[in-house]
Length: 523
Image 1 (cartoon, rainbow, N blue to C red):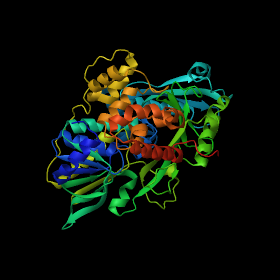
Image 2: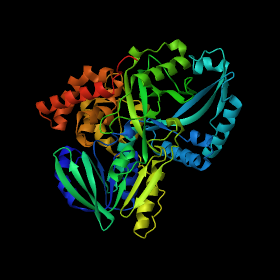
Image 3: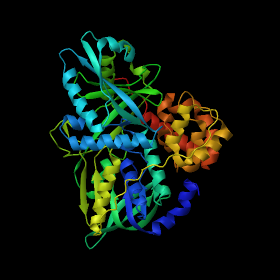
Image 4: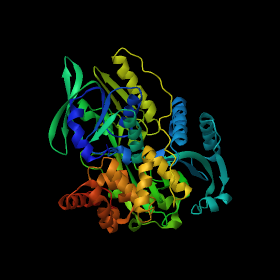
């Protein structure tokens, strides 16, 4: 049966009445990873997400699969080694979704760090990764690599390798693999409270947000992977929510062949300009997020000014202005630290934390790149409460997509689709045959991908479709306003929505886009 709203309505009572080995709360990359690792070991497991899969931080990250250069600079060799190995694993197993991304770090006369010091750091980085990627380019070679770098103090730039992804699609691929192994996942289910018996967590009380119905679910263990929301269920104050915001520009306005990494002149923080999904990203900020977590975060005018200033600092000739911004996004990082800390946000450590109580394990913090290792830590803690040892399994996390002919598409498009859709590629091929191989506007997304998402990716609301299953709400001008009638013609019948339902969804989506993803007020 297709994984859609009809499946959800039919199976929700049965899933709620079942006994589970593990219920995972939180549908970001961490929760998805826990579900995948539990399912592959034969655990009877279910994931619950209060809004939509990847709705929180996991659709609003910087999109980078970092190898941990920042950890290395702080002397954390073990963490860096783990990160570069996990990065390579994702590159090997998910071509088309996790792709190599070269970085250039410019060096300027009299500014820290210099080429020699940074080159030494990159030497250790390459050694831990087991491959040499670093190279130094003197200023004379940068006219072709990064023609906008024309500062008279420019000495050259260090080149190193990392990777980039579509973070929301990565979550969907992990969930796809988890479900294929026997796990289940539901969005739109909010956990109201944890249920205890004699001091042990034995399940939870949840609410189906679509129907307002309350459900009681029982499990041997709970795994809380709710990120910045962790304190709400635990009744603690261990998380310092920090906001990171980004600007998205059309690629023609600021072309970028690789990522440019540099330090902001205002505060010395690292900032990036990099290519993503046929557009160019400028990010990120780092400041305390003092808005309610229940409302979608949005960039502030001061953050917009900060990122535009960063762009002007690095590429003064580009003349990027507020009017050039295509869209924005802001995510809340679950940094483990006191909310009243006197430390600057950028000085807070980014290590994760694990808390365990009878019947429940909570994970907060960590990085996208190492989600598999974090999931294994959670499962080891769960198994220990059962008096068992976790069965180790180093088999591939992702199965390769089936070999399917996709006529009319170039090799890079076929690679992209295989990485994003995995086992759903045969159905996508049928939809391409039915609808055609055309792209939506100037984006890399095919119309057929929209149809597939409506049929088999548990879309409950229009923003699920346009902001996470696809990224059209970010990549198209004004959130795709000019194409919404065409999107309706294709998607409304597949979603089974009435005209009234579509109009309500359209109104809600446009209000949300304007509030949280539009360029916002001029700083």
